[in-house]
Image (cartoon, rainbow, N blue to C red; front, side, top):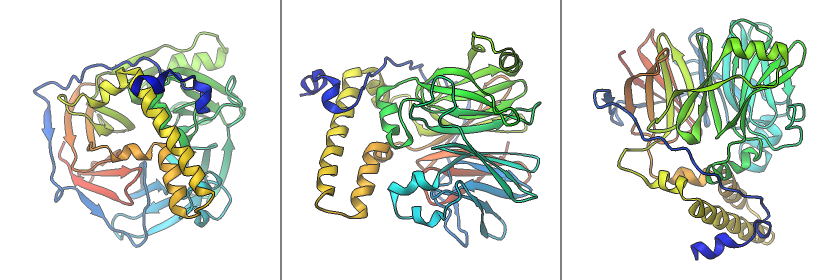
Length: 405
């Protein structure tokens, strides 16, 4: 059965699905690295006066935590008083229409990653591009980049992470996880192991947009460290690096040869989602932590036929659900369809999350935290209180733990 379903031509399944060979480096966590394994009692859930739903990324500014809500809101959270206020929405529509309706999420946007420089907050909208919000004037500018990326004007896209250039406040860098599939088909990116992820530079003043990196497999978290721009090459379980001087020269000259993309850290013991720096440390949230003796996901990644089989079974399941929806209408069917297509079904895999703490200059391990939680996408450290804050794409909560570095 495995063989027969994979030899049927692609067009019968309505998708051009071409699974790619994988780059899988062995996990290289040295035996002398300090391993922390906090208990459920040590990783605590923060309770607020309002629900903080699916806070994928976190940003601390003036003792407040800023995060994106799954229904298109950007929230301002006071960790002391536990009060939550809505700062803005990703698009100029009432975000409440998205709270219980998965098919409306694109209408309301989804704030995926944040950056704050001075009084300016940036938030990527997974569907459109990003917003720029003035924290003093309370004004917002929307940047819709869907149709202006050279060579990718009509492609589906997943806008992911954002960082401002450290020397030019007009330039922001944005990672796109895929330029083949949209956010509603994240699972296809995993199964195909496709490498259509890119990093772009956008000049807010001139509106010039430049592609500065290509062929990333689910490009994810960005971080500026010294003269380097780091980007997570998630499916390949590694962090890549661009030299910012080379990037800036490339943008100004309009050259043909892309800046050199080199490996900063390979062989991570899991899938790196977001990156955050604090002091001399770099925190990489590993969405799935994969123990060295667990080869299930790596074997799936290396077996093209198995991945194609899984993709086609999922595709056939969506056809069944769509057929049933014609005769049985309920929100549960919408959620089931969204789960199948978006990859949320993968969240049921029995893998916990972890946080790799690295030296941000050398990439060497400082420690590894094996969390009792799953689906953690962001780790943000507050040195003033020795607190590690944890964000998640699925939990309706922010978690914390005490951390001494």
